Length: 570
Ligand code: FRU
Image 1: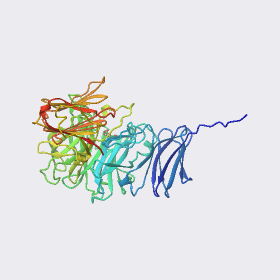
Image 2: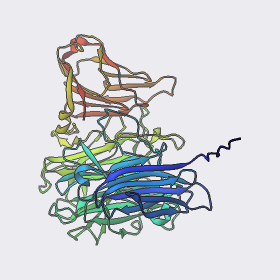
Image 3: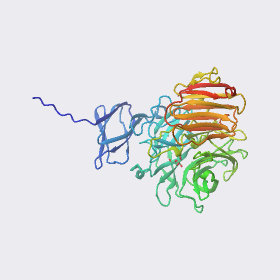
Image 4: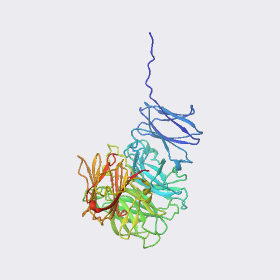
């Protein structure tokens, strides 16, 4: 009789990689069994360097490992006892050029499986608002609201990426972490909320100073306070200090007091905007400091602006840029902010408005107001003044579509310039977007002639020149899951969006628009429309990641003087 040893199913998991000397590894793990410690063994060339361990069961704990030398790394753990969310590796000296290397993510925080998307998305986890958008040390930095461990909003971190052209991004290590207390649980009690960044040296050096809101739900007397931290290496933040521990008194503000946006005023001083709310509606608060690096001395100057349309509650993510030379009193400034919980007469939610006016460093005199985006899925727009003028980017989503029960992968909009044509603010895509044109799909007028044009994987740009301003047309798109079209008629320019069998959609209409040119950017999960160089800009997130399969003019082919279509590729 032969005996066969019973094989105990092994739950041992390994993550292996060849890594260079000085590589740093960030990983998050937690225990699957209450009362038991989760461990992970770190081996280099077969020799154990150390064990990382945690007894936490609710939320993943962050651990950092620095390799003393290069070699074959093996991270191994018992998957029955240890749950691992993310592991990435990077060389601090090269990561700005190479980006991090993700060695592991889980099913819960996996990015959508897209081969050819050209919009910015995180490598893992949840993303909302852009934060700290600016040029530091010669590169464009984009930070963002981030939760690494699932595709749903939760305790906020700041993710981070850099680019030279706003289009191709390199992902950097997680930049800001929630406080130790908030990090213990995944109950969404707060974290490092939205904010902004400036070059701390003022010399365009590598130091970055960030400003953000620390939110702690139910903290008394303030749930939201303003913190600041510097980064000396452009990768990680030094410990934060509190710069504004409370709301200004005597204004009867609600607990909303968030999203510090710091910028240079016309008087050369650092100014800070903060979004808030009182009984009458949303308010934007103005602070300033004489400190050349913005570290301290922030004093309240007053209420810069208020807005109460469309049933809005708080003003969120305010941002302000000069539409010309910041130093002259002739220059107009654009004040842009989100109208939280707003709902307009066409059913659009969470609108963003642009108010143009004069700003002397103390008070703002509005002259005109327009909507930032007729598609209303460009939220928390944040801009900074780059060498060629202001450039902004927004979260390509709308809080009204976010459910606590469902995963909701998101992207950023295409980066946009913020221009002034003397009568209106224009937000066309940055020039770098032209480099995405990979192959021409139609240059001979097939679309203009009414032919059904297949769009390959659906990552395309369509550029239409109209035969006269406002010449009516309707361009229909074939999509497996939704109804989608773009229509121009006497009412204006409209993204027609419908979820089959779903609830009635708002009308995404740029009322009265009569453009002469229209650029449409389609990607898996989004449509962006820029008419007349961004005089009318419309952004709509599309459910699912199926690409648009084809486009066809269903009416008005005489209206299209020429149409060109490109396949886009990063
Ligand atoms: C806007 C916002 C901000 C807040 C952040 C939290 O989308 O609500 O006001 O700081 O998201 O993630």
